[in-house]
Image 1 (cartoon, rainbow, N blue to C red):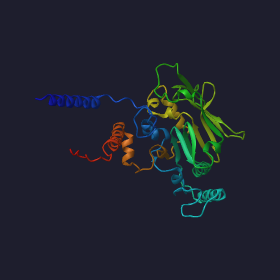
Image 2: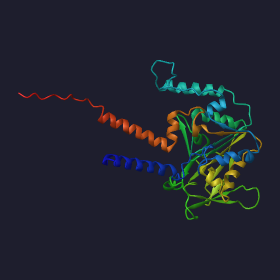
Image 3: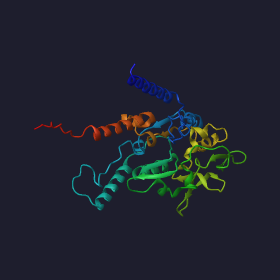
Image 4: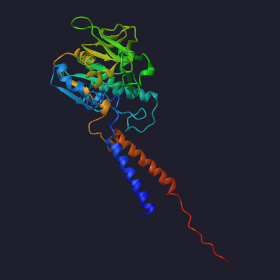
Length: 344
């Protein structure tokens, strides 16, 4: 066997060993906060979603994979391009944009809400809603429904006010340097106690969470009268769970969505916090569990989205792009034909 073949056999052996090592190597624990009902990782909500029928006393728990506007009003939200509807060709200005938003708001207000007793549940790091969706949610609750939102941030799409602005509250971090350290450490040195203030029996129970998992608090921002109650707070009395009354219904707002993840729900000393927080919702009513803000619409699983969701496929995709770029730079250059040298 020639030297070249020995080198080739050695390279193939090393490559095979590397592939086998990567294949059988234990996968590192994924601490990303997906909070999705399909994920069994530490910060998925598979366990909580599975227990939800028992917690709420209902067999009707639906996974919602469409926007708030579609779910509540049964129609697609109007989309304005450059301040004007897509079928209007003349140039827009600020007055036109304001008129279009007002017209869209009037149209949304004229659409009927669904005849249901369902309760809407959102558990995500960031709660996002457009101005029209915020208005629809306020109408939904004012008619006697309940909405439970656990989120660290309250954002909006497009112009208009956020739900936090409309209800007069905000969320804020107690220590922004800890929000990226989601894997809890041993002991209580970096832990914070959360108390349920309206326990049905005995003293308020205390639950210890890592500072990274419970780093956000709630605060009221307006001087107008707020009807409701603080349901849970930290040791300094800063709220982490509020009930705000609106019309005939209630908003339940929680600033520690990571406490609803599998890791904390499976721990005996912290499991009851998430279950108790959701048990404030009236029992026996149907529930809508929002997955749209985490997974998008049902059926929107494009090939690229699937590839980007798996680390191995994502790495292979990036390597393919890099290889293509190198080919363009090295092999796809214009080549000069060799010019023969003629001897005199």
